[in-house]
Amino acid sequence: MLLLKFTLLTLLIEAPDLLVSGENIITCYGDIQHLTCATGLIKVKSSVYGRTDRHTCSASRPASQVANTNCALRISTIADRCNGLKDCDLKTDLLGNPDPCFGTYKYYNTTYECIYGWYSVICEYGYSTLDCGDDSIQIINANYGRAESRTCSNGLPSVLTQNTNCYALNTFSTVSALCNGQRKCTVSADYTIFTDPCFGTLKYLTVSYKCISANRPDI
Image (cartoon, rainbow, N blue to C red; front, side, top):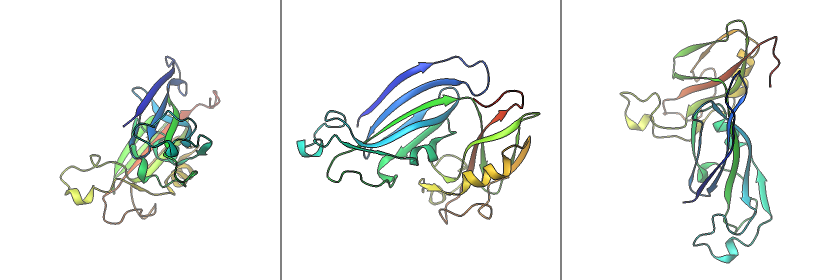
């Protein structure tokens, strides 16, 4: 498995929405891409799937599988699933992206930064109130489903938590329409609000957001 991590920059945070740090991750196809923020929340800047050189992820591969270096497909899947989280593990062989160069062994190259924000996890049928005081809510991301087996799993049989590739595609748009611009907003983890992306799996809702002051435009 090849996992390369490069620190791009570090900036101490003194006000909301400033950059905390930035990283670049390269993950071979079939391995797990791991994004993490020691401080702040993930915000993916770009993700490219393909091959742009012969050396990356080339160990034990025949020359024919690494010869095509003009193969690059920009994707949004990683941003859709990881934005707003502190940690995000994705099985790259389950992302379902189109194949930009059949016969070439590919990898994922993701650049992301860690930004200030708030994060909430709501177990299925529960609810939570997002509160920005005198400021306005701006949703960074939201997902209803299940991305790992540990969250909201206490006392449950494993059959209810083993599907970890479960995402409701309408979550972000639904929560944004409900909460953006509000000072307070109550959100519920309920399949009647979102579509049910994995029947038989106990799901949860993750919501990340920031508070925008009327006297300070968003950065």
